[in-house]
Image (cartoon, rainbow, N blue to C red; front, top):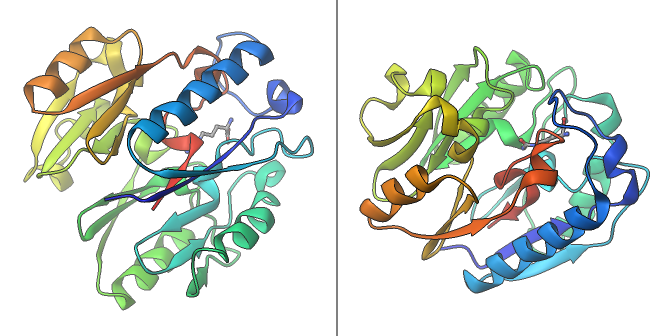
Length: 253
Ligand code: CIR
């Protein structure tokens, strides 16, 4: 069960943020509408939403997920792999102090983005990507194991972040796409396999009684509903343009 969520309003500088997608420049007003709908959907899931004010100096800072890894009783402040994003952790650490007393930190030369970390019950998967290096992954694994969790490092082949292609939706059920579909690390789960053309929808979030998915993926919705999950669909067009997905926009704990 999640009781809290942290989100951050996108600033106007969002449109100048990092992206590898070829989907065009985001429309800021449309983005604000989509972000407000995201907050509303989270509220429907029964969590208390803390919304941080926009900050223009960090164009990608609405993607709060990358700045921390949270468990029920401690927080890990990350060391984001993109230089332009590294300073985002200062605000996130300050906000997390309202909720946590126990902190760990990923230290240079280790880098780690929260988007590379997936929790499935007491087991964590940590992706090595362009943003998370081996040292960052190793540090997080050590922290998690010292706290009694299991942790496994997964080098990524193509995905941007680990959670770009995978989501845990409870009861041993895993949504998987692309390189994770037949990955040996996930062989013991009941898999909900997302076809290549629907890959973007593999980044969905399980929040209490709902799974929030991007709008426009009827097959993904059908598969999740068949697996017993209620879904909420959200238009994510302006978020996708900056390589973002549903998980990136919040810290859930
Ligand atoms: C970036 O390149 O850092 C942002 N434009 C997108 C970050 C997406 N975050 C995530 O997948 N956790």
